[in-house]
Length: 145
Length: 113
Ligand SMILES: Nc1ncnc2c1ncn2[C@@H]1O[C@H](COP(=O)(O)OP(=O)(O)O)[C@@H](O)[C@H]1O
Ligand SMILES: [Mg+2]
Image (tube, rainbow over all chains, first blue to last red; front, side):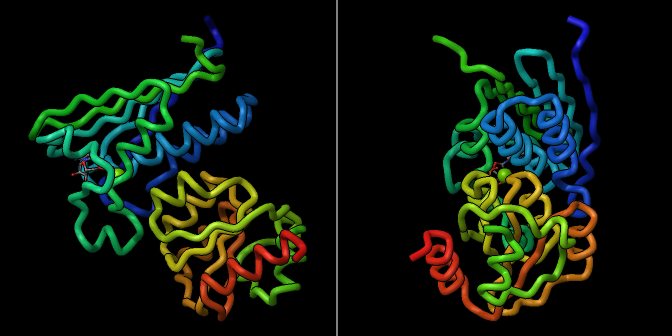
């Protein structure tokens, strides 16, 4: 498999001049290689939410993506505070975002559930005071099950 | 209907967007100020109405490939946001009307009612 695209991005903390750039760049790559609009859309939603979480909750972090002919794998990691209660964090509407963040339109508490809804595979590893890593896979063709 | 045509018809002011960009096609309208909702619900070709004028709306507009951003109530837009819109080829329109009125008028125009 020699046509694998790999990219790495850094995600600065609380910097809204750059927030979303990694996701936008990945969106562009996917559009260029001609994957379906549905895949582009689902990937964009899932990656943007994870990227924004790293920006606002995780003190910034990194994005690593790998694209092969069947799928895109997105790994977004941070070395931030981690998530103490993941079940609670996954609940739609739960958010610890402060007012300053809410005023910008974030903090609906839908990020993690949006990722779950739009990714084909979604995994999250988190430890308090160590950080959070989110794994998102979107397949280019529907997977039969 | 193009962004330019509907802007002429409904008297929207063009804040960012070249004449070439304004030939983009409009297929719908959606309004929401929660970016997570907007991200998931704004469809390609929609006019996205939002009261937010910060840089994040440019990212969401690019990622959703909406036709344009429409700011209601003559809300002022940060220069930084206009510059970023030009850079990312995102169209920004404004209007003195409310989001509700704008939805109604755009919907009516698009459905040819
Ligand atoms: N990378 C992260 N690091 C630390 N906490 C996080 C991270 N991602 C999510 N969280 C926690 O989970 C909550 C819910 O996240 P999410 O569903 O994206 O909603 P929102 O970002 O709108 O608050 C956040 O408010 C935060 O407390
Ligand atoms: Mg979030």
